[in-house]
Image (cartoon, rainbow, N blue to C red; front, side, top):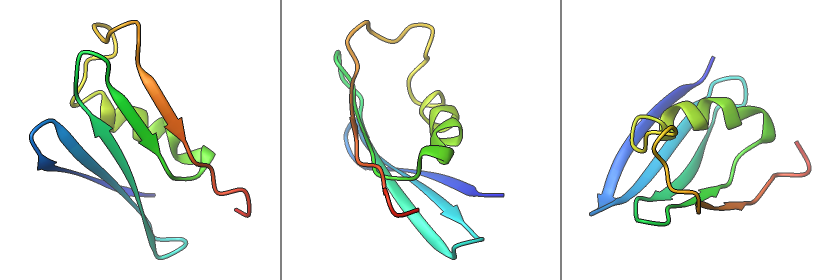
Length: 78
């Protein structure tokens, strides 16, 4: 089970940290809350559901703009 934390590091800029005890590692993702939000996903593919749930605490997925620019940096070796 992973632990997720949200930090607002600047106005409308969030660091979403997901700690995975199995790896004893923390993965950081970044979200810019804007008219056209940007999500930088730098974790594993399998953690996307937890990340989406965390993003939903900041941006309502039902009301999100049609344009949401995701930037994905998968870790291919894991």
